[in-house]
Length: 358
Image 1 (cartoon, rainbow, N blue to C red):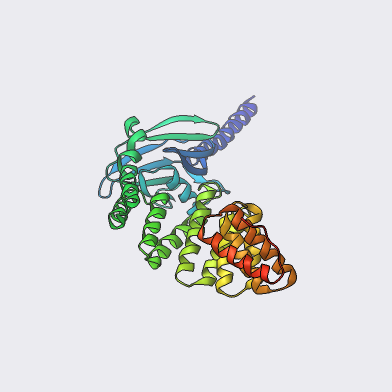
Image 2 (cartoon, helix red, strand yellow):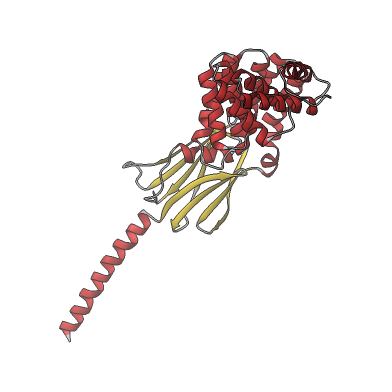
């Protein structure tokens, strides 16, 4: 009887030991961070195991919010890198930087998120839901959430657009700079400022701004930036290179555009212009032909096809030239490019090619 009692006590002690070890480990690491992102001013923390406890601390100089997440580690599939950082910055328009770190020996198993705030922002952080293994955190006061962008950088941006439309380019650039200082991820403001420099024929400054913008967008995860925005910015960068005579750099950007979207017809026109400058006649003609296969209602590419076909000077090319010039006259009969096309048609007629009179 005594032996059975000792054995029972021994088994109980073993059970308590392993239970306490498991409990202690569970207390040290109660949650794993699977991902961190932001959408519509809401911070989302994806977790495994248990939902963690969070602590919020606000500080000044510089203004920032510290989010402490104790008893956590990174999941083996989670890495904090520029892609994660980009997702957070895109979703929180009221911050200008973010840091995420897993603390080491001094405070083991603790994750910290530091949000660096724009000065005018007032926060009221709180957890709004914990479901589907995602902790959703609202950060702004309700009135701030709605108005923060409109009230600051968006309002300044609107004034900049008005100034640019009125031709007041220096004033517009100054306002764009002010809007961007409040929201560095205001890509449209940065793009429009580059366009203002193009309008001032300051192509070098435009190239600098556009190149930086393209590089930043390329680093962001797929889908975080509107595809058309990437295409337009890249195409405009190519145009700025073209205007400064950097034809190889220009063509590289235009080719990047059609690689992203083979139906972006504007880029084919620009590639044709570059190849014309480089006297690559066949390549240039191919690009203009591709353009009209995608968009057939503009006269200019047909005129280029006609001129390039005349340079190639085979019988088939001359026939293509005739058709191209006739198309120009059909599409835009009272324009300068139509007058030039009619003159070319008259020359072809003298050489035995018939054409439709307009």
